[in-house]
Image 1 (cartoon, rainbow, N blue to C red):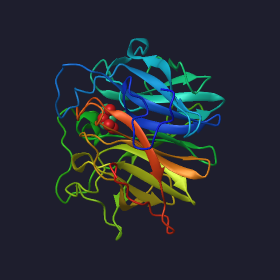
Image 2 (image 1 turned 180 degrees about the vertical axis):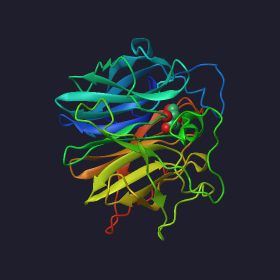
Image 3 (image 1 turned 90 degrees about the vertical axis):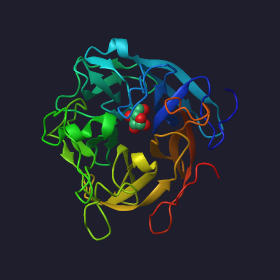
Image 4 (image 1 turned 135 degrees about the horizontal axis):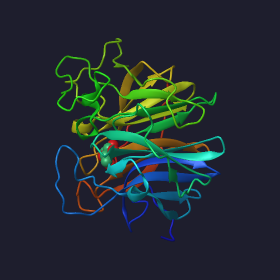
Length: 326
Ligand code: FUB
């Protein structure tokens, strides 16, 4: 672990890591990944194979330095409301406090979003007694905007249960739209200044094509599946996400953090492994994509490794497509 991490190589190899949310805090790059576990449990479309139980925080002083694993930052046993499956987390800084946002299934097997706090970006993080009231589904990603307002984006289909919340309450048997019906978008909620509660009920983000028509559920190359991330570049908000069944990272742009967002294109073509999940961060004068694949485990879907590579914009603000293996 003493050598610099090369682009498109695993950041660490002593543990499996996935779903990287990268931020620059205190002049360093901090990465908040899921911590994948090796196990012989069931594997299915419900995502039972993603049976993670804790989080480790990683950091890089810069892209010439080795990656540091700061050890266990939060464990399932310490989260009073959570039963299982610590999935993709994110972190934010405000009020002189670091906040870790994470999804987990509650005691009724319903995914909720929790928050834990720390005075240090490396943790350890102390969880709140309960999940964020009104939260549901998975994959929280938080944007603290230039005006200091904070937004949490979240939601995932299938095992992420987003389809089950279309009425505003949990419907265990609800199916999502199909064919030419508008696809479900991710959810967004503005956070109160305490960063622990929603200012108002989450609302769905609309993703439209170049003509302003909603992306449809059958358009699996472009429709939202999971893993939202929002960053800002040249005055535009970029919403990027996984297309799930077609295994790409794609993006859409807007002038408003709550959308609607106009679909633009592909950021990352498919990686080895079923899931693809990412974050985008600026460090000094360059932009970077953090993502994962299952190459280190020889393609085992639930044994993934976090990687990074440089991300480049075209003059018109569109993003150049990256091939993870070239
Ligand atoms: O890591 C578990 C789940 O797999 C995440 O929450 C999804 O985004 C997918 O990467």
